[in-house]
Image 1 (cartoon, rainbow, N blue to C red):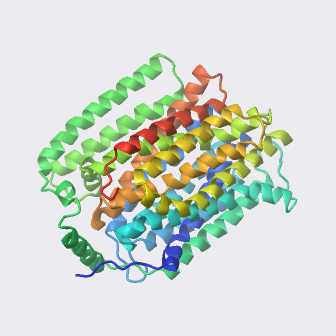
Image 2: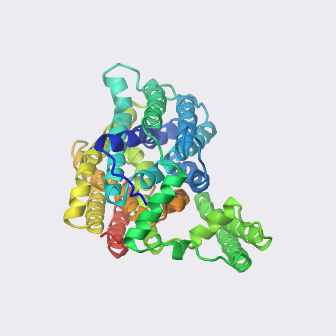
Image 3: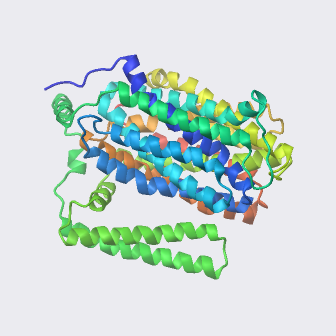
Length: 508
């Protein structure tokens, strides 16, 4: 039996370069989509519901991509790289087209397409670390991804400001038109995304399914364990599971229908329907999965995804709660930082004004700062985790992130906001690496892709919840002042910092 070899620094570097391009596109999306939506006529109350396309796309796409990438093998491109390539092509096209949107619904549709394309590339990249690296190098592998995520996001975030201040490209435009500085930033992003992903595809060779099986057997033999197969691959009584899922599906549909009626009867904001319709949809999928199992159609992707989700390892279940509150905070920040800063610091909500667009550009700078600091912090996560442990490291990082988000409320000088971004940067670096390093050590290689896809549920569900309730809370309790969304995000980050301490991490 063969032990999975250690990879050199430059091998890990090459396999991670693609994330530079992925995050380049993701950062352009995060820093500019609210600006694009507002330019095309969206008001503060509708921003969160327009953003919901992104997490819903991830909820659908990532488990499917994970499921099929586990089962893919191409002699030329390997297991994960076919999905890197497909995602890169689609995302580059979407980045080029999006800033040419002239109507709000077109921009929302392009966000959907862009996020789906990013997810096609991103999910296999997470599983890629588990495939290619031995256990003791995975924290380093995810930290390297965090470095590229940070550096890619820095450059992408400052691009509109650079276009304006270095190249004198116009930063304002008539009402309903995306400024040229934003359009050129997206053009550059399309090229960078494709080239970075191609670098990884051309410089990294994947292990074959036979090699991965041999590595698994060696690890099991060395540790005298079966890598959670007792939890994941037990003998399944499909008819019984199918019956249970059908009953549970009807319960979820009833709950969703009652919530929908309540929202309608009380004339509550339409954003909340995302939650109730989501529950109904989940119930329908459970019933369909149950029916497939009752009719012995047990190899369907939906059946495998549902059964794997309900039999996830304990570590993954515990991490789900940490991820929920961490990503709820991040999504609140991504949606509302632009309106919060333009209103709170620049005192303008007029998207054609010089003040608003200067404030929107400043948000790009702030996002560059937290991403840049995250790229630096990423190098220190592995040694700090060895000095303490991964749970302590992540808890401290989340506390600093919570302080960073809360501090924005008390700051009225745009330069002092840099201090807030440093705390957010520490949290961001850790969120992108530590939970994944803990998780991959609890998963078998033949389920790495599907479980990474399911793990994404606990990233996108909080984003959907945020999109559904934040607009309602701001309107109902905070007079639509976007700054309070960042306060709520800070509190959410603190909750996540406590929950990580209860996660079972077998490597500490």
